[in-house]
Image (cartoon, rainbow, N blue to C red; front, side):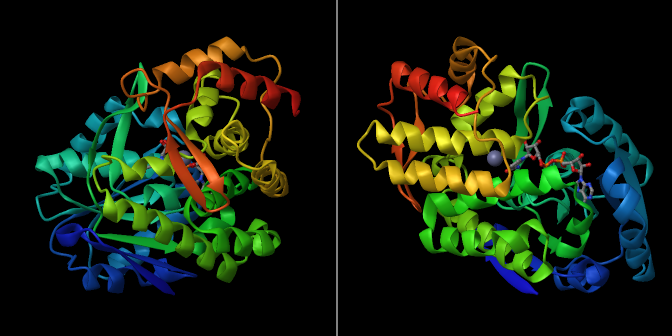
Length: 364
Ligand SMILES: NC(=O)c1ccc[n+]([C@@H]2O[C@H](COP(=O)([O-])OP(=O)(O)OC[C@H]3O[C@@H](n4cnc5c(N)ncnc54)[C@H](O)[C@@H]3O)[C@@H](O)[C@H]2O)c1
Ligand SMILES: [Zn+2]
């Protein structure tokens, strides 16, 4: 088992990563000061519940915890105000009080929703994340929790740090292959931002990662969380530096939006965006070798590397303009300077982006 402290002063918390560690959930809760005195609510989704809810409940009950659960339908549309209200009703009926804890058992959808319930219930109670996707390494660091509005994603939310993250690689063994690949694209993104050595290690161990080898996965998730935590602890509330984490996301978010979140998984859209960012950096004099390396990684992961030709370039550009990350109407892109090094670039022109989108359409 590996342990990483996310260093946020009073709000610091540990991320534990290892094979089978959720079986010892009681020990880990007690170590984090969470005792069985108040009722506890597990929030999860249908797919995760089918595999992993019962063992977790049983372990908690054996430790004397009074557990309740709420199972949402799988998928992004569950990150809704309607579900927030519903879960708060369940929490009230179950008698959750200010010293209760909410356990988020699932991927980023469950983490964001359950975390926001915890942030708002009785003005904030404690929560624990038990991530079950590779992509959720991202949502387990940083404390961003949210639900979606019908007009935009993640616009109703808060910063609420968990007490503990229990990342059990055993729970990831049931992940569908496409989710594995999309998650790995987001993992390698962390390296592309800040850590060349990690990108090399990732590339050398990619075959084991795709097979979900527990030890390799433990190392990969640890390093990905470590890199993100390093950035977040310097900029908890996203005033500047944290922007670098959006490498690949400007194009990625636009692709998700124009396809109504139906064509690309988030990590897949980011994979295309990573190649797009590398291409854009060439316009600022960076070597094409960055693009080639990025493209090679994306291809080996098995994520899409191109934009479907039928998508309108104008629609993609339009979607980018609506991205909440656009400050004062200026295009902000995170661009690679090298593998493992990025800059925040505010000089990208619409024409440069248009050209890169058109090129990405021809890669398919
Ligand atoms: N808060 C943050 O900082 C942050 C960061 C990144 C992403 N997010 C959010 O995370 C969400 C995406 O997360 P995600 O990719 O984990 O999606 P997800 O939670 O929807 O999980 C993906 C799919 O895999 C299934 N699944 C999850 N774990 C499984 C398992 N162990 N076995 C079998 N099936 C399993 C789920 O039911 C779902 O169908 C988005 O809503 C995004 O906004 C938040
Ligand atoms: Zn992302």
